[in-house]
Length: 271
Ligand SMILES: [Zn+2]
Ligand SMILES: [Zn+2]
Image (cartoon, rainbow, N blue to C red; front, top):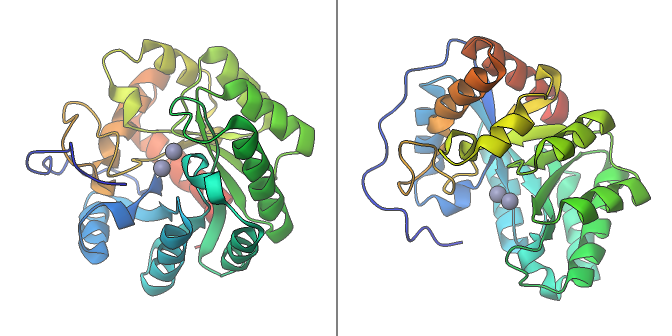
């Protein structure tokens, strides 16, 4: 995906976290910055590790190779629901192969995107089912992209059985959806959207999530947290989201950082 539309200088580094955590979802291949620089900037503020997430075959290969080459970077591999128009059996076989690599820790991002509606719904659903099956077969976590498709995502997970570790990336549902996910034992990953002014429904949804099921992410280079919306996002901005989430949960930022770091290890580890 292109990074056009994100303008201005990179936001300043936030105050470092008191406890290390993990950016559970970013796209290092789309950031236009050397990986070593992005990792160093993140680690300087306590974002010790990150998961770089594939959204096409090419990007999945890149993420797998990058996770093999860099300490503290791990990968997820998949074809994004907006990109599955031509998803083939050969692609599924290659993803399953990539998913067995030691530093590839998840299958994703996969799921359903009815907001853009770029690919027919039944085609998206077939590809989603295939990705779920791969995650279960190789025993890795599942990372879900769900945009305006909550009911069908939840229904399909119930139908086929969710993998043991299932993550809703950039969680975007309301409190009824977050309750459902919590009941099922899913992990809810919150992005910079939790800092947005008009996100009261999202904050209400987050407020009932137990610390044990919480993750944080940037989805960089997208979804830059407030007050830097529109500027380039990167893993070093996680502290902004951690602090916003701590305010919603009325706990200390160190507690959110610590819990999300431990949860990330449970989902994507061991390191
Ligand atoms: Zn996504
Ligand atoms: Zn993403």
